[in-house]
Length: 361
DNA sequence: TCTGGGGTCCTAGGACCC
DNA sequence: TCTGGGGTCCTAGGACCC
Image 1 (cartoon, rainbow, N blue to C red):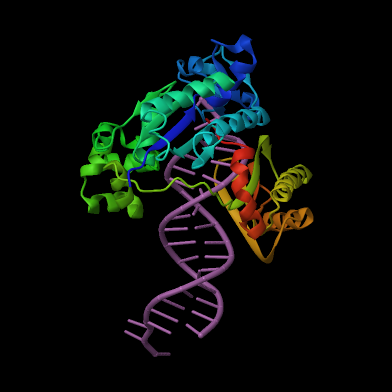
Image 2: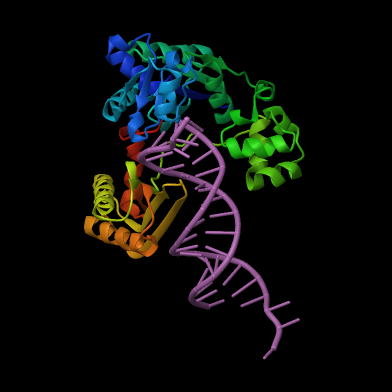
């Protein structure tokens, strides 16, 4: 069947919201994220800040060095959630086949609706105009015959883009792009591909399958399919949550002691609260520790019955910590995750993406 | 330059069962 | 005193995405 898939992505979302709500910030470099003195990183940067080389996930200290005039704003996830819901409602007015990927991004299957909107580009234009009118935010749109093409197309047009890739031109559209443009190719895969002489999506499309499997393992065949413009993955409207977690990086490294154990309890409270809100319990408690040298370990413990009980989570995590900690250890991060969620949690998970926190830009 | 926090998925080894 | 093997669960680590 001939499908038409839209990928919609709000531009520099968190930073754009801050500029929307505070006119003083418009036209200025704005960086959303934690403070440099507390080891924060950039969650989103306005395009004015990006001009200085500031990027998402960059240490805030570096961002402020690159762009000393940047205005740093702490994130306001509740506000981003409000606007996200408004935008998702606009999408829902076009089709019920929506797969939100984060607060600012979604796939839409508009196969049934595209003709009545006057075609792919007209439908994309309508979405952009409607979002702009209702919220003041700019949206980038990619339209194509599958998810891969739609996603890459919206990335290609940013910001405020509208890129339509007609059926039959998928492979030609993708071929010149860097391998990194494909979903699932990160720094490691990119480096491994380069060492095999593969740098573009077109190279992946043409490569020997055996080479790709050697370099990328079991993902090789699927990535080649994507690179050739083939992707029959459906837009998934249901999402099962698999885990609930919380973690915190300390402003300064902590050795074992009351301060660290208090942080553990605080993190556990956050997890228990969010489990309760989701109506979920987990059978497995995972303790995550990052040492001052950035080495990260996890230790987990499973039980027969799922739980969302704070005291249980705290005591389980404390025992896991007891089992690994040495007196000379210093930690920069502690996290607790609950996995193997019970049925209640998985069932209620699908609503959360629409309603809850967050991913970066 | 000094590295967040929310997640998902995959791999690989070992225990255990039949 | 030289080997089973398939299935499932648990654990630990890592790549990747936003």
